[in-house]
Image (cartoon, rainbow, N blue to C red; front, side):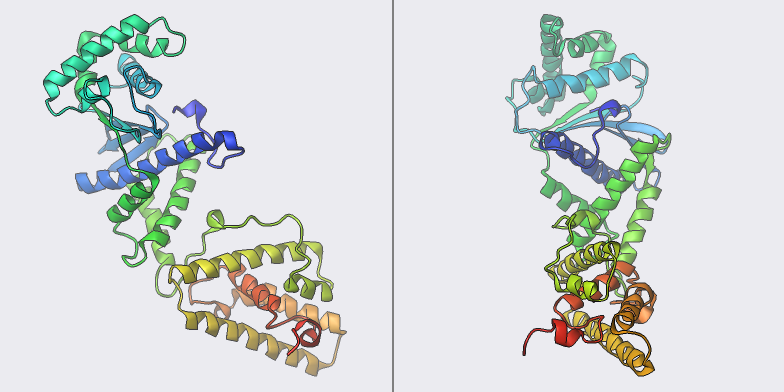
Length: 403
């Protein structure tokens, strides 16, 4: 994959799914390599490029050290496989152009999820333990195959790029190629990243990793869109890790799950929902109903996620619910004692407090530093849906189910 064919991170149709998954695997592997390079080199001056010379370029202390091409495929890499020769072309052209100095110690990795190859094939020989002899055989096979098929329309340019190298350049390349087959699946890659990442909570590796993957995709997408001249450094990743770690502290909760919501936000208002009917009772606007539906969905999903991953205790959820209900009841009493305004006007006053004021009050938060306003708004709508609280002064008689 090269920079001119970088797909969007979000698929637009089914035909793009394989390409999208391949790209997601590539950037997930880039995160793994950045963490691994830091661990192996024991210095923070590690950085990567994505879609630059190759899929992933690794730099250490300002020097290019590795090129990585990732291939997510279930097909065995044969002598004339397109994934193999398209990768060889990228590396050959980089060497021919002088982008790769043949006096440097750059290594070339082809990482594929494909099954193990035939031991006598080019890939099999490149993977063999007796490096000198097997690589000489692999080089001989590659030259012979490229000479025979250089006129092909499909891979002809790949073969020609390899043949354009001098004998010295070909030897340099072959000696530094590493082909990894049976590479880690997405699940295995995620588990490996969790093991390498020492910044997250040891008792909640999976939810931490899910937030990390979303932030990492955002960082990569920003890097690609802005065409930055600098690499993605360890410092940039560390900043992301620190920001996420704050969400997993005891006085906070992670709320950045827009990309993980199980259900899409409906375009049409769900008129059957009690919290929507409650809003109609106080003449809420269409936009207010739409926003309420977004907040309700996010709060429902977040509460489910927090409880499923044991990020929140049952008593916390109950205590927070009780606080919201009590504050609403107190406000209803205060407004009714004032004796001014119609029922709808008084209901709208309670609603405005719950949606505009309460989300910014620390006492209304589920945890001290969990200050995402949509969480409080959504929780109010969740309670209004059951209903356990309401906006219209007579909400209990109108919306509460029979005893």
